[in-house]
Image 1 (spheres, rainbow, N blue to C red):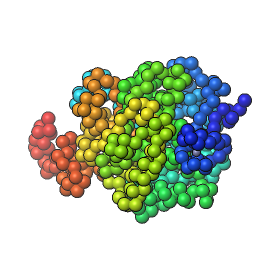
Image 2 (spheres, rainbow, N blue to C red; image 1 turned 30 degrees about the horizontal axis):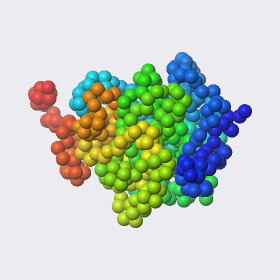
Image 3 (cartoon, helix red, strand yellow; image 1 turned 45 degrees about the horizontal axis):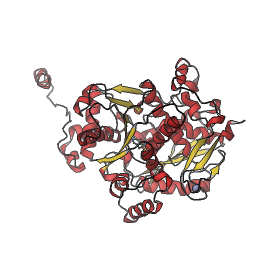
Image 4 (cartoon, rainbow, N blue to C red; image 1 turned 120 degrees about the vertical axis):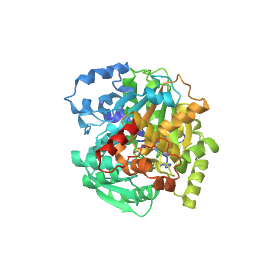
Amino acid sequence: MSLQRASFQKCISPECGAMFDLSQTLVACPDCGHLLDICYEWDRLKVPERLDYFEQFWSQRRNPQRFSGVWRFHELLPFTEIGDCLTIGEGQTVLQQADRLANLVGLQPGKLLLQYEGFNPSGSFKDNGMAAALTHASLQGAKFAACASTGNTSASLAMFAAVTAAVKAIVFVGSGKIAYGKLSQALDYGACTIQIEGDFDDAMQRVRQVCPDLGIYLVNSVNPFRLEGQKTIMLRVLEALRWEPPDWIVVPGGNLGNSSSFGKIFGELKMLGLIDRIPRLAVINAEGASTLNHLYNEQHLRWQGGQFSANQMESCLDSLRDSRAAAQTVASAIEINLPVNLAKCLRALEITDGVVRDVSDEEILDHKALIGRHGFGCEPASGASLAGVRKLREEGLISESDRVVCILTGHGLKDPDVTVGYHTNPAWREEKGIGQATSANPPTTVPNEVEQIIAAIRQFH
Ligand SMILES: *Cc1c(COP(=O)(O)O)cnc(C)c1O
Ligand SMILES: [Zn+2]
């Protein structure tokens, strides 16, 4: 029995259900156009009986694959032999208990936990998925890999390409829409960087056009292998909680790759009998990029076991496309109007009895600043998760005794312009529609005189 044959690609539409060998490089079902999953015949594979099986690998730091926070869980994403798996040391993340923050958003001590995915090598959770996608790319002998990106996917691809030399990286970014921390990474790591006149959604459309013709491997989250890697974020959360599922997972929603992969792994773990309860998922949009919120809460679009109305979804996306209404939020990582994983996210919301909310840029930045003040900090998009917790807490949907995990998707140093603008610049805040900036911590400017410096310090205390 070869591993290759116990795993395969499968169309997510139950009506179609077409299956494809792993050796095919696909980002959509050739028969019907829906997204694809990586599926496993679990009874032909070595599946652990309990999740604490994975603890044995904590002592194997010299084995690069078992050191990886992704491949440590290889048995739950076994699409190839573990020896083939590419790694740059991704997934060394921290789940931090944040009691003072819990208090501020109305949760009991011990009930708010922050999953810092910014501690990945390239500074965002994208490295989890990139490890898996580039493993598949190199198995296929791909020479070039490309993505459209709001910044972090390109930073991750560029870094993996530079460290492993498995592929050459080509990244498509929109103009004026990318945080400098992220753009600087793509440039510094030597990626071929194509800056398109347009936004992420335009870049996404173009990269999908160009890749098949040039035989370039596409690593956006339409790539089903990406999502296999991202499943391990949830496995590390469970690991840090001694394998006991929390009540809520709260995550910002952009292209909806994370939320989709979280739903997939929880469905798999439950089916395999490795957990007995599935956490509820809350996906948080920015108000200026809230397609999912619109479809889920206003149009009441649901997965319905795969019988969802593809027409309703497509007509909403078409009208967004036609109106040329560009997404608009200070959280550039989620500034996306046409999320590519919409259908999979609807499925994840069904599996997890999930909810969707949207939050304003002001809420996003106030909560980003609170996270910074109480922890390691995060980039703007990640702040949406805590803003979402506050909203759901105020609605009473999350109770004060619920255990809540916020996914902090990217590092605070990714987007210093926004952070400095928020803390120091009223004109910038006004331009961005940020009102009070209740958590701003501006510097005190003083003359170069010791008395005045001392006075300023006394005043701060
Ligand atoms: C990519 C990204 C997101 C959006 O994640 P999706 O999986 O596309 O929904 C959110 N935050 C950060 C920092 C990101 O890089
Ligand atoms: Zn299909």
